[in-house]
Length: 219
Ligand SMILES: C[S@@+](CC[C@H](N)C(=O)[O-])C[C@H]1O[C@@H](n2cnc3c(N)ncnc32)[C@H](O)[C@@H]1O
Image 1 (cartoon, rainbow, N blue to C red):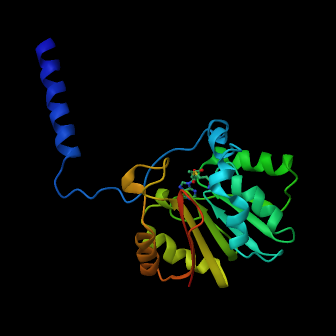
Image 2: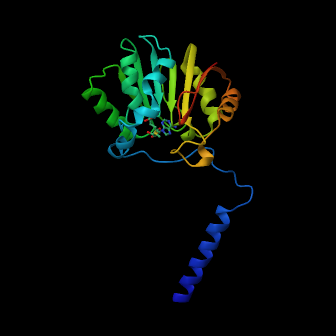
């Protein structure tokens, strides 16, 4: 009996290794990671030390938002950018979009506590941000590499942009001292090529962020 269990375990192990190494198996096109503990992630996402390299005010200034603009922050996380965007569009709306229900609860509480009445948290799916209205600007910070099937995702997102609308992507550089594993860090050219396939052209390119690529696209 004991020998049978050992043999079964060995066979299962060999099968698992063979499956993981299957030649021709496509590598994943995005990084899967859960962000279901807002209190834990707030320690790094909202660490005041982040401001030095994240430069949120400069990023938001580069978006050239009208005071009444509608903005979607896709992958809003704990609201680091959403709350600041809310100040930049006092007569507009910020849709703080995230795939994690716990982040949506956190964003609701944070918006109420900080009296950001123009922040609307929206629960997304992996395939869609579930925006009900087109917006002027979509900001995606450190989340591009978490989105799968990006061509289809961004093609569909075009219908959620108002005429003249733009998508801003900020994500980790290859040489950043922190960030996702190397295979989920993209060069500006990789992002531009993917976005071109989805029907976008470059609106502007910014190189002031020391750790991240920052590109703005239009249709
Ligand atoms: C690394 S965090 C970045 C948070 C925030 N943008 C910031 O800069 O502090 C990525 C966030 O994107 C969310 N996310 C991952 N995939 C997503 C998707 N397909 N749609 C919307 N949000 C997503 C995660 O739940 C997480 O909160």
